[in-house]
Image (cartoon, rainbow, N blue to C red; front, side, top):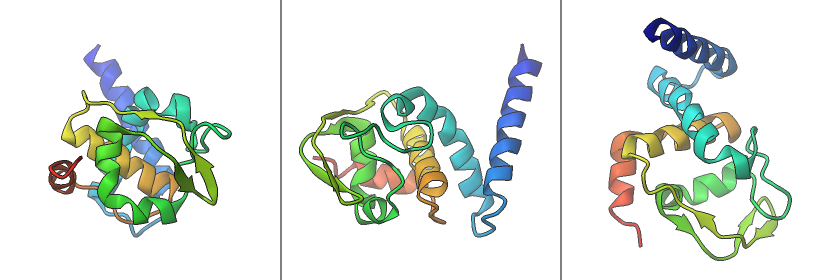
Length: 141
């Protein structure tokens, strides 16, 4: 069982390493966070936001808009953990579907999933550290 789990993790790390290898500006830590974030994303976010962060029509916004992610960086941990209500503009389109949060996610899991979204979907070079997410979660409404 442990061997099988180790093999799966190693395969996942190698696959994501290939995905990120073209982007040599990512640190090893950023790649590790993004690799772990893919698992969190698949489990908690993919059903609404799509396998590639493309969103779901007019219901759920895409997670590929680097401008939106950068402009709202400080609120993203709160959105992931506690959800959000109200209209937002993403990539020039309006969305007004309530997003449930995932309050059971640890601070590290929030950092992982946001790192995955920002580096893989939005092609950003800066990941979310555990410390950054901890500090930002202190300011949630």
